Length: 293
Image (cartoon, rainbow, N blue to C red; front, top):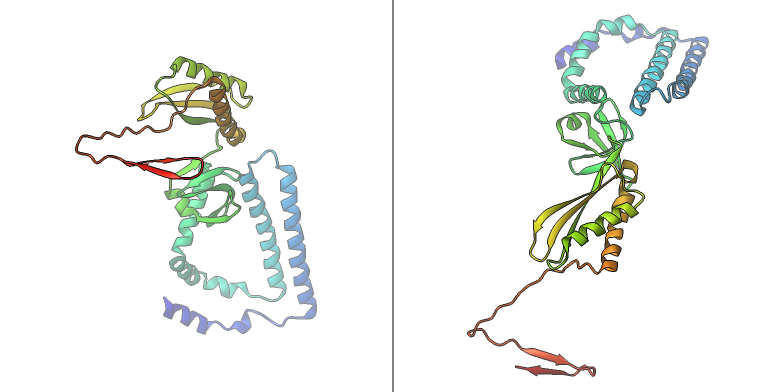
């Protein structure tokens, strides 16, 4: 492969690629590049205004890039022709160049194909909040080779499209509503029916909770120091964090007002006759310590 490329480079007469360049030809080429750049930008703006509501953010991004790059590429080729570039010589060696690039860019081709699958499948789109591996963030763009995320601490993370296709992805805002689960432990001497009524009242009092689906209280079992319950409420996806914070604050305040105990872990210490007595120290207000054996 390397020898073939070297023979091709030796065989090409680069003087045939570019003829004599006059000042007028250079000016025409520069104007073509400038006009192509301006028209590409105008096309991007026209797509944003004309198809802003009809297309999804990801579709607008791809369509905008495709149109603008195509327009600019056409004007760039015209500009190179004005400068006298002979594309016939380059196209004759296109097979060798394509083969060399194919061997050198297998990973890039895999990422490109994976990016097309992501766009067609539409499991992830621009603006979605996703979790892939240990990274959680908002999707900024799905490009040809990689997907770019912005984490909640404002960091940019670039993930190859091949990794996106092969990995498990959790999409947090694909659906309009989400469930908030809160794990609660109450003391064994509490009336469970009163606890459930209190929790349901908390949900009814919270304006972010949805009535449909209705709140649920699910028994999780008997813990070491408490009866464990799962309190589940539903809210809109955009209000998820506010609901999660407010529902826990409401539970804490309702339990405090109702005298419902959230117990600490209890530990019982047993000692037999063979155990040594525990020393006891009594500390008075004067910070004098008296030891009692």
